[in-house]
Length: 272
Image 1 (tube, rainbow, N blue to C red):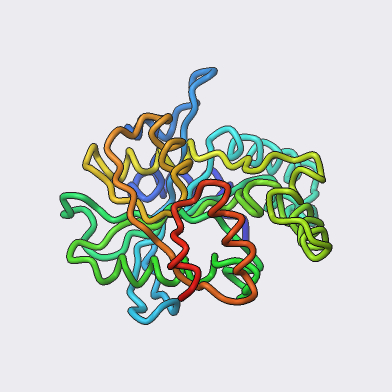
Image 2: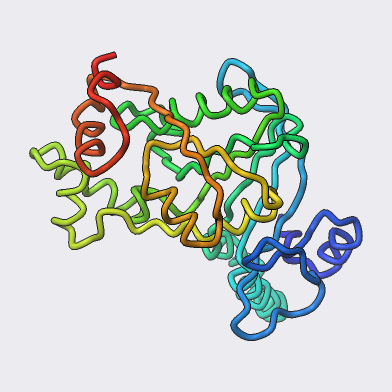
């Protein structure tokens, strides 16, 4: 079940170029050697063909699972200790120790002069449950459709540690209760003593450097801060592409708060 931490399987995957490591500039580095102290790097596992049932286009994507090398090393070290102590029954705890992000390569993205890109923050309630309190689910499906319809395809970066703009699912549930008492999405965060937005896009920037190879990128987002954060991590050529969808009576107040906070959403977008 946990073959991703089995040293023999790891060696086979590295030999087959199915497990690679990149530094924070998106350059491939030696996967077999330990990272020097202080060096930040990501592990990429894939590609895995993934037929998608989301959206109308339903393309077949190449899926890459990604994780920070520091987190992977900690889990592998813990797994070794558990094996030595006969604690295999505790292996299920390892799964909660890593934030595993994903990359979906849709279409012939390698040939695109200016790939279309979506960096999507995970949202269990919207992406999985289909909640209409936000527009996350429709944005995810619309992004897949737009990438599949592109002549060259594009890339979807799915950020696993971004639930509730980075506060986590438990705190997000609490903010929903506060919103039901009249606070907006940002006020609710502040009432809990949490930032408006604590998401870290540095891993997304590293992945876009690796897959983008210096090409100009067109980013599906209404959030100028997301563009600023990615550019602050070293991406220099990003064009923002508007991505409004899933507007509904249930999320209208939420979207109005995002608009007031700085998202590029026009009043006309909210009346559709």
